[in-house]
Image 1 (cartoon, rainbow, N blue to C red):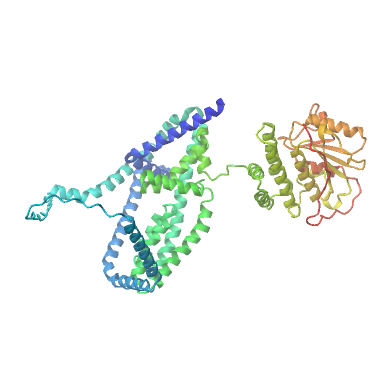
Image 2: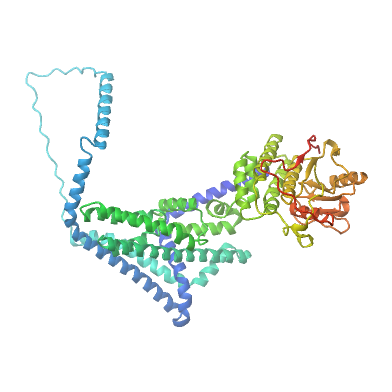
Length: 639
């Protein structure tokens, strides 16, 4: 209880800190926005500065790079402004085409058009509602008039009021014109000075940040800073490459199909594509509107739309996945949420900075344990292991999705590897929940039934053979064409439900290797079943938990008394490390079994070692839907 209260208090404190930080960022946006822009520019300029300072020094390299960068930005803005001025001069010539198209649209929505019929229907409904409302509203009570004199009072005409502003003086005129321009110029100058300062004092700022973040763990802090810097720099570089490869075909295509000012729209496409998701749509809107105004028909509009669609599909499906394979580490939903949050916080500048800032948050969540929820919510790394996902689907009584997960994994790895690395760990999670009381008998029944359904779905499918060569002892096993398949193999499951499920997967793995195994399960009180005959060559004990050594020792002793002469293999499937085989006091010595294994593939290898010396042809796989093993019904085991 105290632990839960502590976790709740910690989560509440983290939420309060998040709200306070968001409020500070919003209220102090006039300070934080230039600082964030300068940090972003410094990330992009650090790699060329490290190369350039070898020849001209640190200060000269920083000033030169900043001057070149802002010269390029100002030059690009000048070109864009000139293109817009040229476009504004030509707009009157497009007036006739716009009027013609609007007239055509009006005719299409005439009295016989769909739009007109819909509007008429809405108007009639509105009139009916108004009539009903007027009929239901009671008439107002008559107001008694005051006793009026014999002659009515003359009505006074309203006096018009005219407000005239005083003429602006020279200073006010200059302020009204230059005021809107001063803020962007001041922002640009401040960002340029901050970038120069950051580049000149990069090492000192890094050391001070490390001291604030935690000098006791220099390794983790350094790794976090390096990862954030490399991710942001790589993102900016790759995004610039993608945008250029997107803008050049757009400009060339617009020029060839006849859209005016193709250079302008190409440059805007390069810049606007830094805005996630919305950038390409904004970049396409201007040329599409212009295509409507330029040509008398609609062909140019459709050619322009097709050009943007084709280039966007190629860029989004081929170029971006190739260049952005692991550049940001953000999930798709995280990019959308980041764009919404930072736009709400800082406006258009926040939209431009959304991805770099969120990348830094994900890196912080990866290296700061108390902020790990940031990486879970925003990162693209899987938050559940394959075994956890498989176990969750089994608990949710969804064997179909669990089967899909299994089929996807089996397309890339052998059956034995999937059973050992996904299925058995999932069953071990179920046994762990049962042991600590978190899994009720009803949920345990759902788990075992779902696992059995998954196994039935996989039985009739032919995947990559399980072995030879998968187990640890593969080198000592004969080749498949000389293996004997006449050995009688019996899988004895422990007293728990999941022991039987694990034995079923072991039997399936043995059958895929050509054997014909049978399964029996221990009854209450670990009672042995009469189905264990003297003809058995190998007996495989199946325990999902590694703490079943006393039970295994008891079963082995009972089997030895029957003098069956069979090889006994004890399997503890949730054992993390390979069990000792020959040391005193190890599982082999305490159980008395001939071999102790910790994976299904090891059990298959031990069965192969017990084969007779003669050789026969391998047995064929049974037909689909045939029974893969003979399940002997025995009452479920007790503790």
